[in-house]
Image (cartoon, rainbow, N blue to C red; front, top):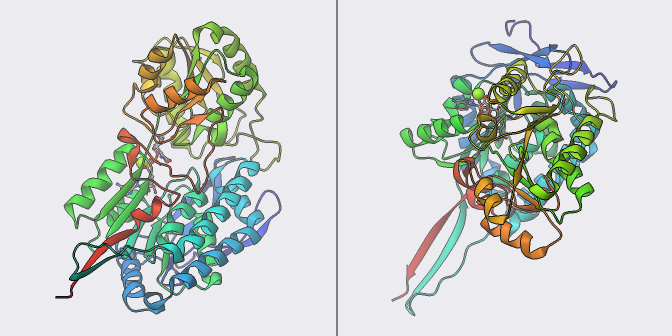
Length: 498
Ligand code: NAI
Ligand code: MG
């Protein structure tokens, strides 16, 4: 389709009856516009595999235009003079607008990503919390006075970096949007954010809320486009001084290389995982089974922190496998817009194929499918909750991120054994331990090399808690006060009083 025929807005009616105006253009300098090269791309509905519409596509030239707008906003526009408190007010206003538009935003997410509407509502609630939290930080970011000599006065300032590039994935399109925009804006930066090509719709609707909230033009720019074009243009841009990326480990490496080869922009990466979820013999088994089920099948397993390696103490292994298998089979899989659905569709044909390929690999490696292993329904990209047993540590399904509703369940003997197994991948994003013993919980927690350890729970994220990876799971931490470091740099001013 050419831009001549694709409008900048279109009325959408979603399967649950929600009607709204969907922006289709790139949001640059406060306006929705077509891409300079006149390209558009197709958006697909994961629940059916059918076309949902088209959006305008950004290429490198649009990235340049967006960066120029963001740079101008940073150095010259009203944003360059705004008080920290007023930055906070704008974020609080944006949080209010997310809250007022919760139903439409959640519906867009369910439609665009294929996730269950009940989970999508939770995502938007977390966006509200995150934006409000960073709204609160905006006027509490400050430096120090450091005394070094009686005849000097020295202070530090925690200054914004400038234009930040942000590249987000498709698994939590709006939540990743909020995680990125919140701290960057609280610190006074301007941003060019690229959504994932699979899920551009929510980010554009959120862009219209930025406009409504009153952000000056150029402060927040949201573009739709592909990684190899728009994404790599961000990573290698000479006027972008910080890039934040969430996605696959291979692309994370490319982003870092592009940053190194261009202007040494600061890099934070939130990458993959192969997180261990450990059930000790003294755990409350019923509750532990609920958490291992939630840990892997939440969001169809499309979570960087998914608990995909389940380790159960040998004394209770058979009992847990039986209970978990029963529980997994009870999950309601299907229509994302059914309020009872827990697991919707996988995001794309490519992801569906990738997951099915891993299921084949697991079988070939000699693992046993306890349940699932096949598609669900006859249209769209649904996969039944899948459990592999009889796995060994060296199998690819135990080492590589599958990013779908597929986990492995294995035995361990004692703490030493499970710590070695838990730490046995290149990743280190999340982990969990289920036990009634505080000393077991603390011993395992301190020995696991992971950015998060959950005890007697799973996926228990909160905007106030830092989140990020050890090892090849990434660099830096998002959320919490920690994320403010990603978006500021320290200036030291030393005044000679002599
Ligand atoms: P991806 O890493 O290719 O895509 C994530 C984002 O990066 C998208 O916005 C994409 O357009 C962009 N991108 C891709 N190539 C780029 C490049 N060369 N330069 C700059 N930006 C680029 O992930 P993909 O292909 O969608 O999924 C593949 C696997 O990645 C998944 O199966 C999963 O294992 C992992 N993944 C992890 C995520 C996480 O939350 N940590 C999220 C999405 C995917
Ligand atoms: Mg990719």
